[in-house]
Length: 242
Image (cartoon, rainbow, N blue to C red; front, side, top):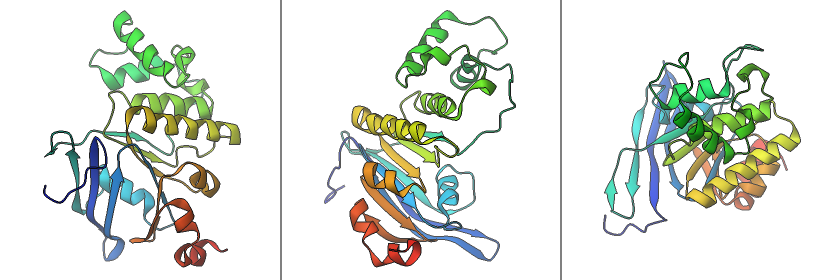
């Protein structure tokens, strides 16, 4: 690709995404370049199309446009591997399923009701350890706190290591300390693994602190750039106030 400047090990581009629900235009010509080793945060008012954009990238809603992934080391397009942490998952309190059961069901084809596989158990424990969650491996999912559950989901989403990690309001319902811890984990991920991370958030203070790039969305991209650049813009002030 002549004239293309490599931004790192890989490069994800969201190209001309459009979504309609009936006659209603939900997303219009959305183009975003997600750099590796960076946290790109999408902000916007309710109804701006943030979660719909994530669903379009994941292939969960009908859309036009595409997502391309380039391996900059080999200079070839490859199929993208995406990790995803949803805003919330419905879990019954005190459900008997353990963290091991959930994790094992996601990474292997062995029925979880069979005897634990020692090799898989250790593999899961090592992955959880990266997120300070190895002690949760035998704990019931329903007994986890919001912060503990998000650590587990983040560990699952990054096994194997994705090219693009998508986080949809991942700290919704988590206390202030848990929220800060989660952002620290995400910050460490992008640095250690040169990972492209796309996150939807309403917490503008933490966005200012941790984001490398901010996308202001209102059905289309109306402003993008570094946090201070977007937050000082007229487009931002018109939607969020001074």
